[in-house]
Image 1 (spheres, rainbow, N blue to C red):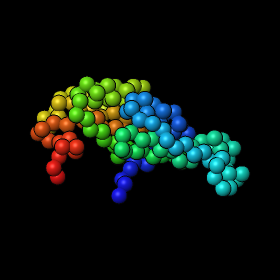
Image 2 (spheres, one colour):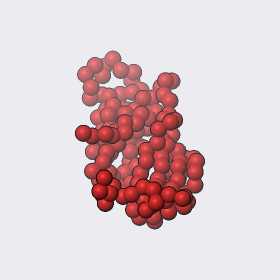
Image 3 (cartoon, rainbow, N blue to C red):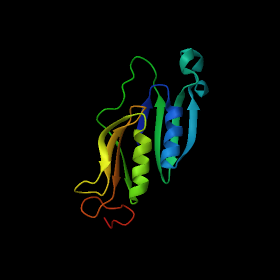
Image 4 (tube, one colour):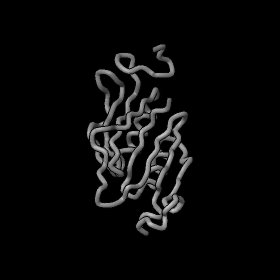
Length: 146
């Protein structure tokens, strides 16, 4: 089974996914536009070049999403994308990249469970948690026997 986050953007998915690919070291593998779907001739003209479905691959994981520009758009509020790292410096770099132009909610710092943890909302409105695996709380899933 796959379990993947599906994010909705305010007309800027392509920009967001390019940023995430750079920061996370991933690759945008799908960008399907509304112009490609059946019935596109009935779509509002401002939506035609927007992304109907996008996929970003980071290692063996993916984030998917679409544009939902318009008055009914609401950025995510109670869900965060959590990333886990074994390398402190890499996690700190990722946190800096994700929080650039956004809002730092909890600065990246040592906690009782991790050598480095931080929470931010990026410039696209997406909430992120960046965590360095620590022996006292979260383990690296690659080495966790469970």
